[in-house]
Image 1 (cartoon, rainbow, N blue to C red):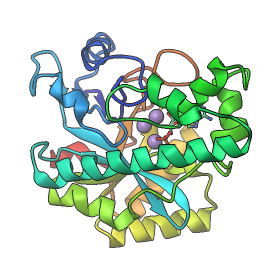
Image 2: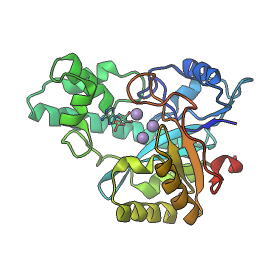
Image 3: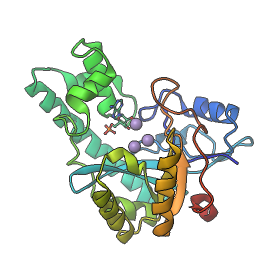
Length: 272
Ligand code: AMP
Ligand code: MN
Ligand code: MN
Ligand code: MN
C-alpha cells in the first residue's frame, strides 16, 4: 500500500487541480492520498469525499512560527466540517493577506514597486504566498528565475521571508487536535536546524500535543530516512510520509515516489 500524505494543488502552490492530482496519484498507484494545501481547505470543495480508486484522507499544511523559524505542521484525518479547522483556515488566510502586503512593502524598499498587486493577480483563491512573489519578480525581469527570486529576496533569512504573522506552534497544533485530527511535523530536515535545535523543536511540538513527524519527505537519502526514523521511534511519535508534490518539474517528487517507511516506526495511518 502506498500512502502519500503530503501534496499540493492549484489551491495553494501546486500546478495541478485537485482532480488532476487525484488522477496522477491513481496512475502512480497511490492507495491513500492526503491533499495538504498551505493553509486552505478549498481543494476539498472540488472533490468528492470518497473515490472508488483511491482513499482520500483530509489534510492541510499549516504555517506556524517557533522561535523565529517558520515551521510547517501537517494536519491529517480531521473533521473537515469542524469549526476548529474551518476557523484555522480563515485565521491563516487573513494572516497570509496581511503578510503579503508586508512582503510587498519589503520589496518596495528594494525599489520593486507593485509586487503585492502583481502577486495577487497571479494567485487564485485564498492562497497568496512567496511563490507568487517569485513569479512576479521573474515575469518582470527582476530576476532570471524563480530560484533566483528565492535566493535573493524570498528564501529563508532573506528580507522577504516574513514569518511574524503565523500563529505560534502550540496554537496551530491545538486547532488540529480540536478538529479531531493528527498533528504531524512536516519535513523536519528542511528547516536547516542544528541537531540541538531540532530536538528542542520536537520537545516543544510534543509538549503542545503534536503526535507525528514526517520520517520521509519526497526524495531523500537512506541515511536521512534512518536518522528520522530513529528520532521518531525514540520519541514514540507516529511516522508519516509523503511526496510534498507540487509539480512534475524542478526538484519535486512525483506522487507516491519516495522511500517507504522503515519497520521500526509506527505508521500514522494505524490511527486513521
Ligand atoms: P509561503 O507559504 O508563502 O511561505 O511560501 C513557501 C513555499 O514556497 C513553499 O511551500 C515552497 O513551495 C516554495 N519555496 C520555498 N523555498 C523555495 C525555493 N528556494 N525555490 C522554490 N520554491 C520555494
Ligand atoms: Mn509549497
Ligand atoms: Mn512545507
Ligand atoms: Mn508542502
